[in-house]
Image (cartoon, rainbow, N blue to C red; front, side, top):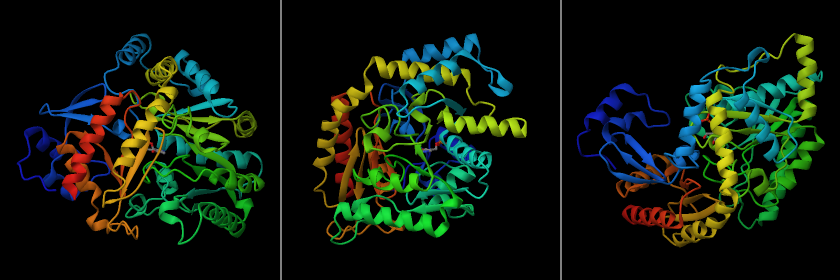
Length: 453
Ligand code: PLP
């Protein structure tokens, strides 16, 4: 849907000055950017004062919505006390310690140490470096490949984008790098074969993973990485038996299991961690986004004691543990992480998400019969509506004529922000959204869907 109106002054300044991430750059001048001014609760207001309901928590991260006074106070207080310090060379800071203690307390598996990053990409990049370091420490220099999955999203640094299994992250970027393998995506609706039951689908994926490991040689494979519920690939919830089918194969071959909890963590799926919602038992964990409810950038890698001990031994041989980011463990980010977790606990956010989920599911189910809708799906308060060109055959739209981006722009017209991810429209509202606000979000979505017919 082209914007026929001339750009406002602020839109033109934006176009003149900003290289926008994940944006069709060739259409920016024509469509005009949506420049946000301020936000309160689950509502956002653009610079013209038009109101929007935020249906995506920004980028799956603003779980407490906007303008939370407790978060603002926590940041202000930490800015006054100590606005910056670092953890290099054995330095420490109270907020970084407190947050690490809290993460150890709530982690889904026993965790010994927390390594801080500034983002989810850096967390996953760090995971790969740590897997390499670990295997070097154990004297297994060949055990370095990482298995990811088709449709995975793990970020945009060279390694994180290589782990990602989406075409736009590879096309034009000379990626993936060597040593990254992609196994099947566990989305039954899209990848299940004609006449194949869900159980048969899972068995086929497990066999295919085993074949890949045996073909490559288990002695060359360090780790398997997975989002418990895939996000940017289209909110893809694996079959209930998926992780219990593949994990024994990975463990049998001494391949560590990395849970990318960057979107799933901190209540989003109706448990503290997505891995708990899908029966995944990780070795290590990446976290970010709702870790601070997006009031500050912060990421974390959580590792168990035995793996940490290998780093200690290797650091003793080499002379130091040579990895770290200037802003890893930033005190303001950590103070916000501590406060966010405290708020999630005090407000029983997990129970709150579980309580809202039936309404969320009912509103998703209401659009299921629409001719453009192939499948609706969710896990807790993350969900998607998959759009198809042909409902009976599940035929997807030709990417050149994808309807999702058009729908997303109709949504903007109706005052709702959702995101087109591939052929799906994703929903990931702030976890504090009320029933009335959630109904309003879906009412606006239905209006936009009717425009798209
Ligand atoms: N992992 C997952 C599952 C994500 O969804 C994202 C971002 O959306 C990332 C990693 C990358 O995080 P960041 O954008 O903070 O680098």
